[in-house]
Length: 137
Image (cartoon, rainbow, N blue to C red; front, side, top):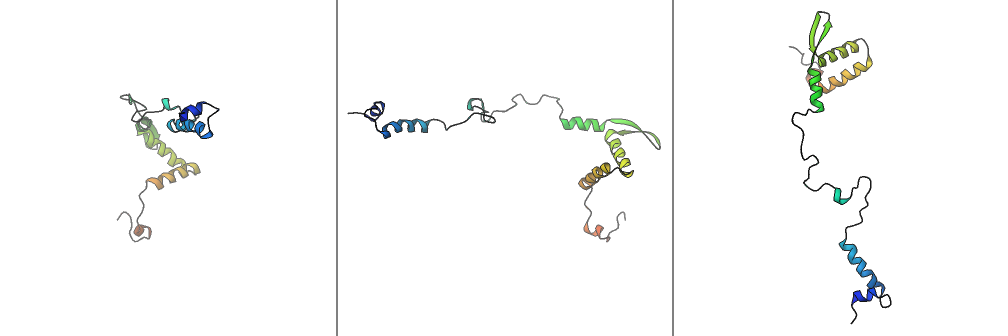
């Protein structure tokens, strides 16, 4: 008796179904075609589930960009104004500069300050807009 696989190995007795059957079996057990390329690393080097990209974590005392910015903005400097020398934060000095130039007609400073005003100013109520409530009373 001739086995199915024996017939496939013997080209004289093999049929097309006999030859295709072993290939179909190996294709179903193997992984689907995975093309390695840009943005598609080999499976062996991909992150494993539950594996952190930074296993040691952030160094103690390391500052973020936000913290550096806030530290610089809070730093006190001495400025000269109409009343003499005054110590203010760099952020306050920056806003004073922007407001001064906006009032003098610099449209860039005006646009930036108006954008900040829209973002941070409280929204007036409908009664205040229509003049039913007078502010400050």
